Amino acid sequence: MINIYRYLHKYLGIVRNNIVKIIPENSFLFKWMTIIGLKINARSCHIPLTSMRIGVYATEHCNLNCRCCTAFSPLADKTFLNIDTYRKDIEKIAELTHNNLDLFYITGGEPLLHPQISDIIIIADQYFPKTAKQIFTNGILLLNMPDLFWETCQKTKIQICLSRYPIKLDIDQIRSKAKAYNVSFDFFGGRDVPIKLMWKYPLDLEGKQSLRRSYNLCTQINTCVTLKDGKIYPCNTIAGIKHFNKYFNAKLEVISDDVLDIYKVEDINEVYSFLARAKHFCRYCNRRGIVLGIPYGSSKKEITEWT
Ligand code: SF4
Ligand code: SF4
Image (cartoon, rainbow, N blue to C red; front, side, top):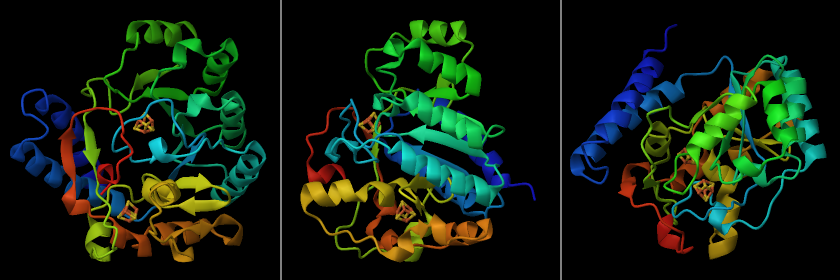
């Protein structure tokens, strides 16, 4: 079946990248257009899977400290992906998917902070040689990465995707370096994506949101599936909430139904069914309360950045 919503979402993204040059992100008109875009995006995300994309956090902390970070990285202690656990988990996912995913991505935090980032890429390539692979980075460390990193990217054909924050980066030099190593490089969101303003998807500390409405408006479903410590997390929010809970002494509870133990799964369709249903945790997500166009700035680690 042709997924018309995926096409619509793709082209709306291009429209958005251009319209934002003339309409401020914090205006009512832009918010209204965004809510419509999110609804369409959510429709595209909710179509049941027959294959999937999955990501891992190489680190959960970051060398930037952006306010409203959806990965909660400003609140995270230093956390590096354990290579042995990762290899075991990847092997299990490869077995379940017959070594075939739509996309495998490495993210964070800032993944280039991981001292074994090249190993992480190589392991992904060993188990998913035919799958498209991407690494998402803020780019700060790119020009200091050793030759081994660039050679690994070249050999595994992983694409480097740069999130476009308003920070000082020599993009021309990064492009030249990627070109010299024959490594694919682009901005996350596409070549014409505007420099980032921040968006806030507020959490409801009391968990009083309609679970169904939050889920129906959620654009992380099926697209931000995270593999961590033997479990599949359906979204970044559940995957990172422990940092929020720890920092603010909050109690946004993740229950066993919110995550899936991959070692109890025998058939990939169990994963797709798990991803296709609303989670207990969705009641903490106030998806309608989205705040757009927040000027980029450093996190002060105040709870209001996430609520
Ligand atoms: S660069 Fe990305 S992961 Fe790092 S703090 Fe900023 S928003 Fe979070
Ligand atoms: S908890 Fe539910 S609504 Fe919130 S981001 Fe995750 S899947 Fe989406």
